Amino acid sequence: MKLVAIESSTPASSVALMDGTDVVGSASRIDRRGHSAFLTAALDFCLDQADWSPADLDGVAVGIGPGLYTGLRVGIATAQGLAATLGIPIVPVTSLDALAHRSKTGRRHIWAIVDLRRGEFAVASYRPVPGGVVRDTMPEVVTPQGLRAMLLSDADDVLLVGDVPALGDGFLTGLHRARVGRPRFPSAVAVAGLGGPRIAHDDVPHPDEVRPLYLRDPDVTVSSALLEHKSPWEDA
Amino acid sequence: MSGPTVLAFETSCDETGVAVVRGREVLSNVIGSQVDLHARFGGVVPEVAARAHVESIRSLSHRALGEAGVHPDDLDGVAATQGPGLIGPLLVGFSFGKAMAWARQLPFVGVDHMEGHLTAPVLESDFEPPAVALLASGGHSQLVHVKAWGDYEVLGETIDDAAGEAFDKLARYLGLGFPGGPAIDAASDGGDPTALDLPRPLRDRPLDFSFSGLKTAVITRIESAKQAGTLPPLADVAASIQEAIVDSLLEKAFNAIEATGVEVLGGGGGVFANRRLREKFADEADRRGVALHIPSRKLCTDNGAMIGAAGVRLLQDGQYSSWGSNVDVNMRLG
Ligand SMILES: [Zn+2]
Image 1: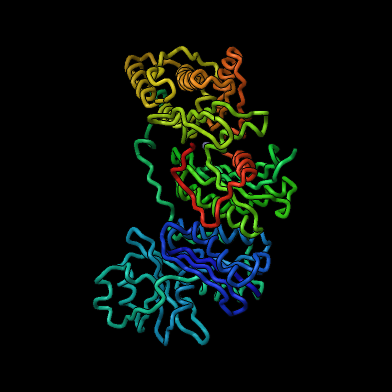
Image 2: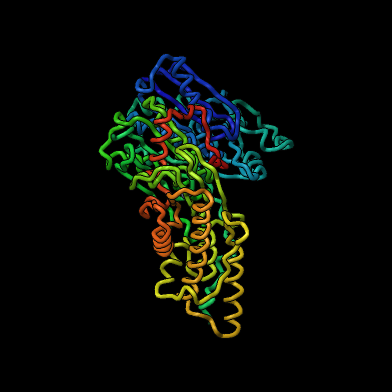
């Protein structure tokens, strides 16, 4: 089975081509703004390297966040455009799952962390099981202080994966049972690793269900002057 | 002559437009409008718009192809708005369209939204340059000299608010809701357009627009009338505001016709859905013997077909965008 994976929910965008479990092409770039310029060009480059044509593809796996809204929408729009045109299945993979899946865990309890900006982070915890990891908690939005409290109350040794540097300089101080692991950003290879088996087992949603996982409502500021404004005729 | 078949996407603001255009013929033109989503905020919220685009673009593209009876194999190219517009919304249509093109190894063309508006008349008439085009909407007010296809000179534009923005702000003040253009159009029914003597600004800059002074003038008038207990009927106020905006657009458009010496006037943008504006432009063009090409309302407001029309032209000229192309929120004609 030939699979293409796209991940662009963090500053690191990447694409990967998989033939079964083999990575036959991949490209990545760290750039917060250039997702749309990068993704299709990278797909074209990788397919060229693999000597495939788009029509050879059997499925698309795409990172749906949580993460940076603009980037993850570009990734999803690109993946949707591909899947719709080629008539092939599309499966969603969360950025937190992709992070945890690629970590070398040992026995530690894993906490996957993605920077959402404005002082907030998406986190979820995972525990190692034979052959992989299982998610313990639903993804949630926390501040660094909130995350510290959660980590301090975790009775296990913990492995932090994801954008730990974005949590700030002193974040790890006093967290004696915590260790920081790799990767820092989710990758298309990890997205393929999780999405591939689901496509192989025909465990795919309707494409309209492949949507961004924002975890936050849109930031809408409506001036109260506007909302409270009455028509001049109302009380005349 | 039928011309190439293009699938086109327009997502620069709050309408998800997808269309199939063959040459100068619209085969389908579907629109997922977000007006209701944004109405409660009194204006377009970029993040809300971007979210709605990404949720609807797949099914709308499916519908556009279905209604056109066109299979992706029958396409000669894909077009998408590249700018100007809101970054989040633009990226959705541009990325989706580019991926579709790449998947079929078809040419992809990024289209200037304003070139889309000024090309739209070709879908319903024999509109050809040289011409002057007036483009007026909530986001833009521009006068463009269309010397030839692809050869544009911006003659004038607004120095403050866009015409549609003036409608929005005044409708909000009058308590008429969002979007303002249709609301004021409806409220003006039976009103006296001469009831309020409102300014027609920038007489010294014949090709530029200004609408912020109008807003101030209306508010000052109404507030003092209210104090004096002589508030005029809402219909009269709406009709007077509409008349002032329409007159300003009309005067500048025909100034541009005189300045360039061309005899063809095109128009586009949401403001051209206004009934009074369409009526007055038709009368004035008639009086002056100018050929007027204003598309039907559906092609004046943002839509995919206009991007398809411009896309056909770019495709025929071989002006393809690369797979590494990106949106340009500040894209400018000329
Ligand atoms: Zn427009």
